[in-house]
Image (cartoon, rainbow, N blue to C red; front, side, top):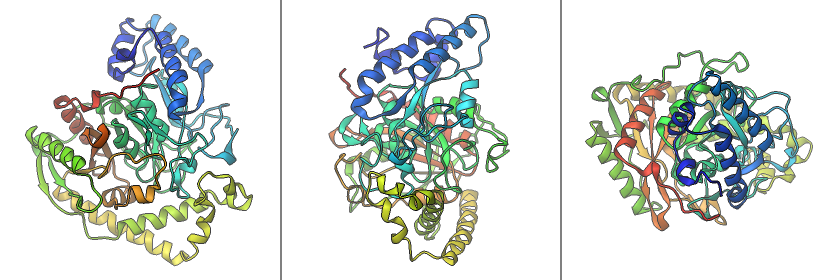
Length: 470
């Protein structure tokens, strides 16, 4: 293993950044250390689809030379990272996690990759993901060109999808931070199961230009990292309008610490979940302790309910219709038969009962739901709720059976394009990580980040790390 050791490789972005800026830590040495760790641990976890050592070394040398000349670009300068393998990288394979896209390359970087390059960040490679980001459905963890995502806390358990490699790579200190995407759960899920912090931004906060879009009106790009503070730094670098993406919002990006609503004025609506049937008591207890901690920190919390609405059905119908449109080519040319999970190839037949009028009704109902949630946020500033009701399932399990409960907050949040932050809050059975989430109104990322940082100043769960042997 690297001479730098785990204590350095598990440092936060801000801690690494301070050492790099003061020239106590070399970007070249740091990059080599992460590359060595990727070489020794990455294959065991199926975390990377493609490693880019030569590009990383070139970018590290350039960063080190610039910093030596006094041209410091900011807190990500000289910081390595990994990008989910649906983000285009010029001349580097971008497989979308799917066998029929093996060898696929693009001529230009995705906007977020370009913005990180301009910030001086160093690309270590492309992170594994569930094929087509799970847009055509999947029931097993091995639905990926890279194999099943293996959890650093227990490789016999899943990392979560679809940003499986992003979750594993951060938790195992193969990268200090990663980019993932979420249609419904794909940032929050691996964050919860791997014991890390993940931020799903508001729909439109971050450009998707150059990204595979599974569901055009749902997909978001966001960071997975060691802490809320690190997510803030990454989001600051990638957020904002983009001429290359007509859905990218021109809403001002105000993410500085303290830019959110003041704690004294915040009121959280606690949305309890029914743990009585499929939930695990250890997960419930960890969530309750997290809520107590936030309350002790000064957050006013009141138990409440989401608006009565068939959000799960509306979100599921729209996502399915949009994904079938996105991946229509693979049904026409037969590529869908190469996908690892057999469920996907029958999605057209499964969805035959869905009609055009059904989709129009769902769009209209979604608008009603957004109005109901706007009213909800006139009474509450944030939603506090468990992320999952159980720890990560085993690799071989049918996910429909291993995770048999509904996700009402995820359905509402993604249907309405709302931001959410996933935060680790302890451990469940077999010492597997447990997390919870805070969800806010549109473009209230700063409030969520402030609350996340407040919680993480009072707890140390985000600093826990798995035992990994070389």
